[in-house]
Image 1 (cartoon, one colour):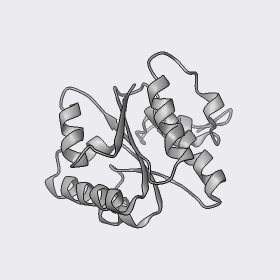
Image 2 (cartoon, one colour; image 1 turned 90 degrees about the vertical axis):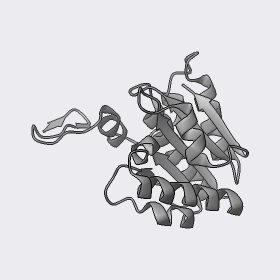
Image 3 (cartoon, one colour; image 1 turned 135 degrees about the vertical axis):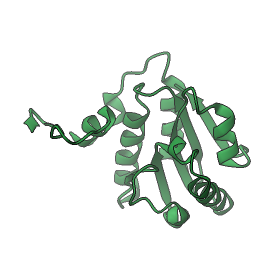
Length: 168
């Protein structure tokens, strides 16, 4: 079904609201309202876009705009870098976590989805540690919920030194 600039899923297809919203048009940071709850997350994403070797994680509840901020950062980074900086989702079957350390700039959503899967969790942790050693820019989103905590994120990052962790 198609609705005024929004790609709506068919009845049998389940999708996140952020997937539908982010698919509608390229974003910029000017399209995200700087609220008291998300200013630190926007600042972390802007530092990621502006710097090289900057790593940041945006943490918060589901539906609070983490994916929108990541999509805007990816779109701006694409324009600045002159090469595509796609938004990856850690829970997508086609996302090869072991190869994420190969891309120069990484924007990764849904990183909490690897927590229940020991092999995927280890693959992502190794990729993130390798990216840190190589000084490659990384921006990820982590949904904090009843089963996923800030401690889980810190365990996933390995050493949180070199990471900016911003709550939303």
